[in-house]
Structures are given as structure tokens and as C-alpha cells.
Image (cartoon, rainbow, N blue to C red; front, side, top):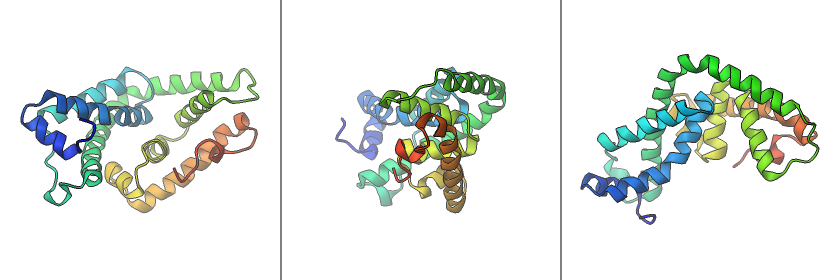
Length: 201
């Protein structure tokens, strides 16, 4: 079912095709989990939130506007925006109880990142370093960077998901990139974050 658009999969799920829902989960779950982790940190809370989002999708999927039907990219953008908005709202509900846990994890990851004196960073280690760096910057910056850098969402899509203005999203991305660069500078020998995560991606 990989060749079917999100709109086609939603329609098939509405007819009771369980395989269509599985395909939707496969297509969107990873991005949702990454977004949840950007807001809540690593751990079961993010997974629980994603499962709740998918449960809501199963019970009452959104109705795609008629003007996007037949355009696979537009269908994907609308559904992804709906999924990420639901996820973000659930994360905001969960976040208060998660603050202490996130602080502990940030302290642990910070001590791990500063110990060991790594001179050369391999690709997998670089990605882990970026994720650790993201864990230490402000949550609003981290959220937009994850959506931009890892999910390739446009500024307009990020604005719709987060409820912020496009200009604010751009500012948060700019400030977040600088904060992330500062976190990664010791590890990358001054090369900067663009060496591992180009801003235009």
C-alpha cells in the first residue's frame, strides 16, 4: 500500500481495511515519535502520546478538504499537520509532570557528552551528538528544529502545527541553530552544526 496516498488510505480505513491503517501508522509513526521526543525527551511518555494520537486517528480520522484530494503531497501535509497538532496538544498536557524527568535526563546526557574527549565523530555518533545537543536547548527551539531538520517541514507547516507565526518559527529556527551550534562546537572542533546538519535540509 506504499503507493497509495494518505487520502486513499484514509478512505480505505473508513471502509474497514485494517491494512490501510497499518500503512498510515508506518508512514507517520516515526515522525510523530521524533516530535514527541523533542517535546518530552526520551522515554515511554513520548511513545504513550504517539499511541494516543494513533488511537484518535483510528477512532475519528480527520476529513481531508476537497481541494487537496488527489494531490498526494497536499493530502500528506494536511494529515501530518492534524497528527502533529493532536500530538502537540497531548504533549502540552503531559509536559508538566515530565519537567523533572527531562531535567535529570539532560544532566545525564550532558555529563556523557563532556566525558571521553572524542576526537573523531562517526556518522552514528554525530547523529547521537545532535540529538543530545537538541535535548539541551530550549524546548520551543528544539521542537521547530526537529520538525525542520528531521521532518523537512516548511516554515508554514511548522507554524500551523505549533500555532506560531511564520516569522516566529523562522526566528526560533535561527536562534535554535545557533544554540545547537554552541552545544556541538566542542565536539566538532569548531566546524559548527552546519557540518552535520545543513540548515537548508
